[in-house]
Length: 244
Ligand code: UGA
Ligand code: MN
Image 1 (cartoon, rainbow, N blue to C red):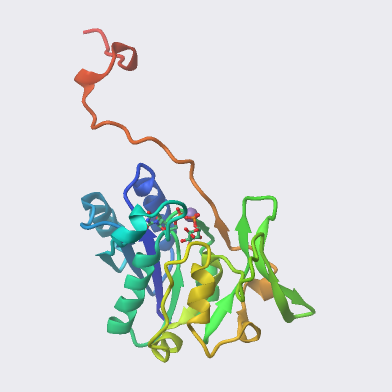
Image 2 (image 1 turned 60 degrees about the horizontal axis):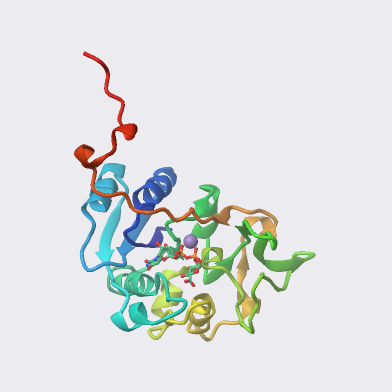
């Protein structure tokens, strides 16, 4: 089955390095179509060039966060407009296969993509977290799914990480109302609930019955953007010029 990878991204100093790392991972995976969706009005040319150079089958789309959410104080629904654009693309262009919401800054073991490929309806697996909780994962006892472990349960029916599940395209197409809500912290739960009828006990366990970590929710340190490179503006302590 074909894999559709839906990746939200946005302009920032880390964007090209993150996408380079992710692209060089995906270049090892066969039969994959990458939907790279920017939270922006227009496509970033450097992103287009990077995607073309990788040779990965892809579509480069844009889906800006609605102004109302951008202006709002407090947590923002990051990547939601992008992921919903990805779902819209699937509804218009895909008939079968499996899709996965893969943020641009996580760390993926290429074996994960082979696990995902066999998803019949909705599959789940552990996600490594670099926090004191260590991971977010389905809880499996003697091969039987018993519930979930997550650092922040917050009354969610599906207390899982965005990187911890995949869905079959046919399963999505049978649910025309499935969508991700603009609800910070509850995006995964809201989306998975919108797949009703679908219950936690129906999930397919991947990664050797959830005993292996094949993806980590990593985060890069945020950096300040550099000014456009103009050597005449730099203090001479930043320049070393060889003597003629
Ligand atoms: C966590 C979850 O893993 C995300 O899926 C969820 O959207 C996010 O929290 C949230 O609830 O806000 P986290 O690592 O904290 O992710 O968030 P980011 O990596 O900053 O953003 C998630 C994705 O959205 C990334 O692929 C990022 O490139 C994209 N994004 C972020 C945008 O498209 N626009 C933004 O303004 C910020
Ligand atoms: Mn992230």
